[in-house]
Amino acid sequence: MDFGKQLAAHETSIPGVIVFDLTVHGDNRGWFKENWQRSKMLKLGLPDFGPVQNNISYNESRGATRGIHAEPWDKLISIAAGKIFGAWVDLRPGASYGQVFCCELDPTRAIYVPRGVGNAYQALEDGTIYTYLVNAHWSAEQKKNYTFVNLADPQLNISWPIPLEKSIRSEADLHHPFLADALPMGPRKTFVVGSNGQLGRALQAEVARRGLEGWEFHDIESFDMCDPVAYEHIAWDTFGTIINAAAFTAVDKAETAEGRRAAWNINVEGVAKLCRVAAEHQLTLVHVSSDYVFDGIQESHNESEEFAPLGVYGQTKAAADALVAQLQRHFVVRSSWVIGDGKNFVRTMMDLSHRVAGGKLAQVSVVNDQIGRLTFTKDMAAGILWLLGYREGDTALDDRAPHAEFGTYNLTGSGASASWSDIAARIFDLTGGNGDAVKPVSTAEYFAEAPSPISPRPHYSTLALNKLSATGFVPANWEESLKAYIEAEQAR
Image (cartoon, rainbow, N blue to C red; front, top):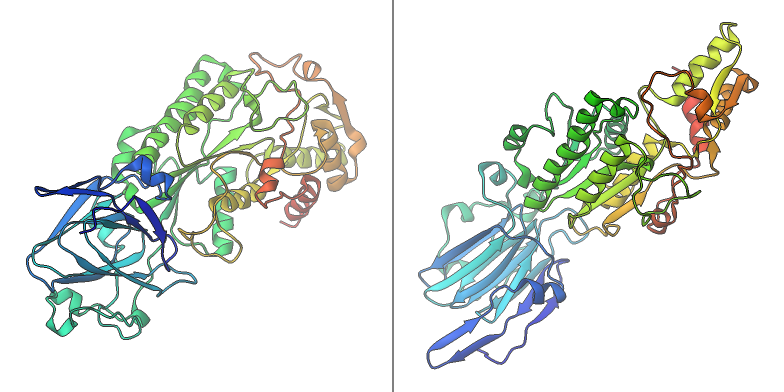
């Protein structure tokens, strides 16, 4: 055994598979090593994969051969005693499907194997002890996601040191399919909360349009994110991502005693529970935020601006953003003035335009001192998929696909900022040609006779899109999206 190695990492022919040289200290008594050292190995390229279970396989005799098994978790494999010949086969969908990598491991070498890469080994010495750290708990649900390929497949062309006919194999391993008939590893699933909201519906439509695999959509009937018991019935280790499209958004009601409790319960306590399960299972959490986390003094808000919410709703959204930001794997997607399939400003203005055209109204007052841009949920859905790593044409999220850097991203329509009254006039013109029926008024005037309490609104709600655009995703111009939206509504 080589006691002189320094800790080092080496890439292999399979994307994401990394071989590590381990430093082993030995003398006449035996040897000692750091088998897994998080800080040092992360610096060398090991993903922070969050192991939760340690398994050991003891091999009585030389020639014991196991595999080829691809399990739905990542693992770090090392040897406690003896030596093995290992073979790894990429069973993830993609360009490297079927790629093979082989090497020997002894106590001075380890290998990191990502989810979906098939694993096999042959013991080269009696009493070989093979050990591996994994980042998901074994369960019957997880076992449904295993996939296999035959050790003897000639297409793989693995040169086993001990001929397979002289090896010791299980009955099950003898009958695994060849690569041509093997099932590729399915993707980690995506769990969507709030499926009946405007964004939830847009996500469902976009997922259906692209034919994406492994998505589950839940409304409050099938999953109440505020109920601790609901979390006990989900096999979280089978998921890779949670998208939180649920929220309490009644900004004025949030200023009442009853509404304040509901807003904090849904927007903060519920999000805290999602954060807890995401941290425990190393999941990516996508959380939708709001321009209401700012006071609206600055004309444009970037992602690094400090929170300064004016009302209860904004306070709850800011608190949730701070919780989500503690996760290693997170995207906070900040929007404003959301328009989708459901009750919204555009539909309300279209209805009022029809009433003006029908002689039932003469004018409609709309505030002119709140400035921002519309956010169409179709763009939000596409932007979220982009941040997660999907590209047009993908049907599943490739574990090896490049992702945007985790963090907070503004995601609204692009284009010039406008006031609510400017937007209303455009809607009236596009609907009934009667934009002159929109009367601009101040926020104070508009709410002068409204029952209290009324939540304060940010004066400027425009969110800067530079950070998002730098990832390669540029949202559509909101004015073009508005025209298309109205045309679609009129064609119904």
